[in-house]
Length: 359
Ligand code: IPM
Ligand code: MN
Image (cartoon, rainbow, N blue to C red):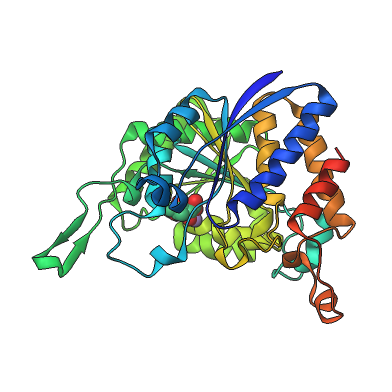
């Protein structure tokens, strides 16, 4: 199989972790006789530095023409505490999502058994946890107009906006996924307060009754969902929600596994799909060769699945599992005891090389 992949390392640790995912994909290509062609492009703070635009047209062209996009992370501290910055790295990510039509963001959360002790949840609460968050990605407060300031800058507003069509297309993704899983979808919203949430409930229920009656559908308010995710995470199978709620809940859910450095994601839409770790650019670790590459490598596994390469994807997942089981892990996954006894863990490149050797 021959596939073209747009490679967008981005900022911070992005280049280090994507380099390991590329190495793993190259090992897969060699072992299974495929050809993956990588074309690198700029996004985020590095794109602003190079050409003043966090998502340049040239990058968009490369993404559009590729079979998939592998993305690292964006963000740079020099923008975080400067509310006056007109151009920000995050705008690149939002523009990329919108212009590639990536309306469904899939964030699977399935803890590795050997990392049970690293989870902050105790008393067997993570037993049986295997959920996937389906986050709407191109609507809601992130994109709604109008937004801005009035009263001479003393008042600010954002708009939460959803159309029935935007809800239906992402709900379909959730229901279809549920058919290959435990057939259970939970819609998370704030329908007791928000009109957009009431439209979500009504639309998802109608779609369910008309086309997906074989799936169990329930509804949960987002404040309660935030609590249930840590008290009974095994309740969830497919958690469907709007953009901002999904952003918040997926960070919360990620810590259940012990490290946010393990969680992959896929953003899908009309044509090309994008694969990225759910963590950010971790600027404190930039250039230190200590960032966990596994989230990005598992994102590459999701990409292989989307190419229909199931055996290859599970070889990658098994490689990651083996690295974790054998303790070939970056410092974020060391136990407190290992750290106290002077354990330093392995480097980003050592973990990547170990996984490559195990493909
Ligand atoms: C994410 C990130 C982004 C988001 C930021 C960087 C704009 O937090 O992918 O979850 O809020 O969507
Ligand atoms: Mn986020």
